[in-house]
Image (cartoon, rainbow, N blue to C red; front, side):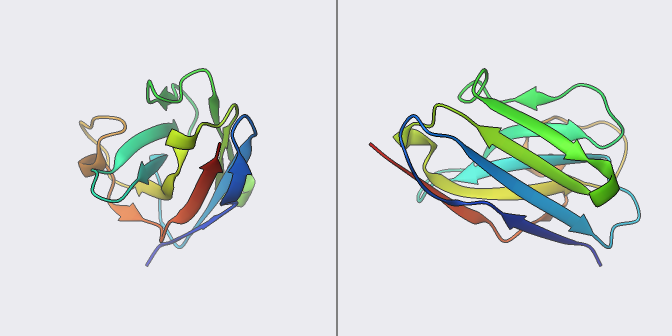
Length: 125
C-alpha cells in the first residue's frame, strides 16, 4: 500500500515564498504527482502536476508564473514552490498520485487515485 507524506506547510507573510514537499513510498509505479488545495466550503482545486517520467507540467491559472513543481526521482519526492504568496493561497495543500494509465485530465481531482493527509499553508497580509 502506498503512502504520501507532505511537509513544508506553515505560516508566511504575503509576498513570501514556501516550498512544499511530498515523498511517495510503497507504489509500484506512479504516472503523475500533483498538488491540490482546499479551503473550507470549497471544492478541492488542482494546483500543479508533474509526470514522474518527465514531460509537460501543468499549473492552475491561479498560481501560473508563481509556482514551480519539480521532482527528485531518486527520492520519489515532488516539491512545489510558490512565490509571491497571497492571502488567497491560504489552504490545506494535498499531494496526490495517479498510478494508472490511459486517458486522464490533469489537475482534475478524479484523475488521481491516492492522496496525502494534507498540510496547512496560511498566508497573512
